[in-house]
Amino acid sequence: MTPDASQMAGFSGGGPDFSLMQMALYGFLFMIGVLMLLTMLATLSLPVFFGALAAMNLGLKGTNNLPDPLGKWSKLAGLVFRSLRRNLLRTALTYIALFVLTGMLSFIYMIVSFLGNFTAEKEGQQLVILTEKFSIPSQMPPGYARQLKDIIRDKLPKQYQPADIDNSFMTWSFVGATTDPTKFSPENNFFLFALDPDAISSGMMAEQGLSKEDLGEDDWDKLLGLVELVRQDKRHIIIGEDKLKIMNKQVGDEIKFTSTNYRELEFECKIVGAFPSGSRLGGGAAMRYDYLQSKLDAYLVQKGQPHPNADRCLNLVWVRMPSKEAFERLAAIVNQAESFSAPAAKMETFSAAVGSFLEPYKDIFWGMKYIIMPAIVCIMCLVIGITITIGVRERRAEMAVLKVLGFQPRQVQAMVVSESVLIGVYGGMLATWCVYFLPMFITKFTKTVGVKFAFFDNFKPSEWILLYGPLLGIAVGLIGSFMPSRSASKVKVSEVFAQVA
Image 1 (cartoon, rainbow, N blue to C red):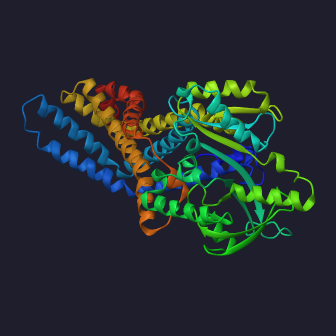
Image 2: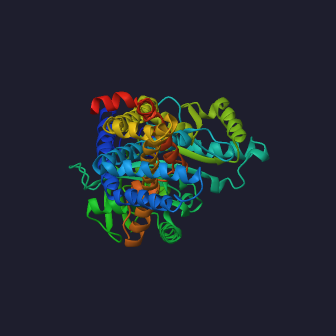
Image 3: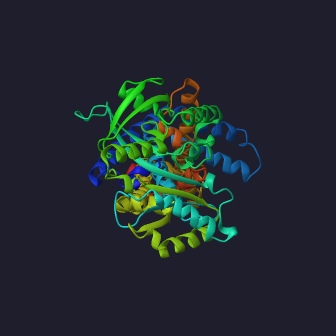
């Protein structure tokens, strides 16, 4: 659900470079898939919908003999359920339409809400990043990491320093790799994060899904065991399970690869573990940074000159600061320090970095929020309005009879409104229940059988949709039935019986 950090840094050797057209295509295909899924769920939930209506109707029958006005209103409510049963196909299609539209609206709302919360500036602890200021990809001298750590220790007041600077500090270097330099294909190309293994065990990789919360206690303990294996030998690496399947490799294999961005550097490694399938690093890999540095040093000894990338092998520096004010103090010092001028560097929060990454797609998200979502609500109102209008026209004679029997216009109007609100409430409620609980159910099921899917494992629905769904159903029912109910309340008995005669 979050953008890959290598993409945010602009590293072309990592994941795919998504263009706006590609994003639009993927979004369209995603919506088609969601529509098909919601239509299937709506159809499967029809027995629940009609069963709930039947149960409510049965409960009302027990109150018909109560003293007025309770008995009178229960009898009127019975007419509402009778009207809904009059044309089961129309009622079912209306429910399915509202279910699908509410479900789609819930998906879009959660995506927009998640991105908004993710890119919003937060108070309290701040995860901040040091990157090159004017160039993409970010490539900085390795000494920048030591200089930044010295500034935090020596120039920041004690109350603005992390409690444990070593466990709150992490560096990243990106290494593109291929097992066959003559042939570039998914089977022999992969991407590695070069970092200190302690960054994983200290929780600095939590934003990339490597935490006890994301992996679960068992997988987290296994990951810590793999980190210990990597500490034993700098040639030990971890590759994601998804990537291992593509490469036709397995844990325990020896692997030799050539770097695609550090030309002429060859690495001989052993795969000692795998990141869980479906996790954010399921298609990536990780190696020790000091192994990369040793290869750069060996190049200097063999060639008599530094590697062309030796002085720009640092891509990102991550620091977890105790507060927003602490980050602002550190950023001010970094911006004024001459030691970060060749090349110029900048500090920003992780949420700001994600916001910069998403900047090219802001028009798409704006359209989803202010065009697509209101349009879906309008369509829902039209669907229920047209359905209720057809029903009212078919029952004009019945409305006239009710008036002859003494029903007031407001009672006739209330009966029509109740029909649309009932369909809206159940359509909205059951749709949001499915949207909320289905990913949780799939996550638990896949973990039980040992399979993981990145979308469902990282998808965390908002609890608010459980409230928004029924409320939206009520609002749509009231708005959609406004004109049909007014038309029903104004039915003239004389005109209806004149037409019948």
